[in-house]
Image (cartoon, rainbow, N blue to C red; front, side, top):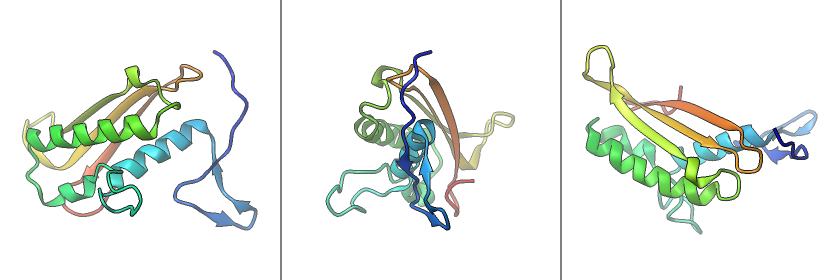
Length: 139
């Protein structure tokens, strides 16, 4: 597997401790970018109103396949833009569901599964992020 020089990125959310500014490695930085897109509402950023998938706005929406498809499209377009150069766009896969696999019934949370390959080194990554529809964000 090819190696790139170790790069440090500012940690998100931004943190400073006794040793200084906290940083993240490449893989963690990409995950932090994904979380920024997921939990930022559209129009929340003044100079980038289209940024974000606004998954928190889904709190009051019915947990149905139509919602999952809408969130998937928003997330896909936002991630392709923000992860340009970091992730091979051909490998980006997003799955969203909110059904309990045992009962087949809708649940109070949706699960966002994101798979991709880091462009420069070909390392595959997968993140499963549960999102509560009725209150808190990620858990």
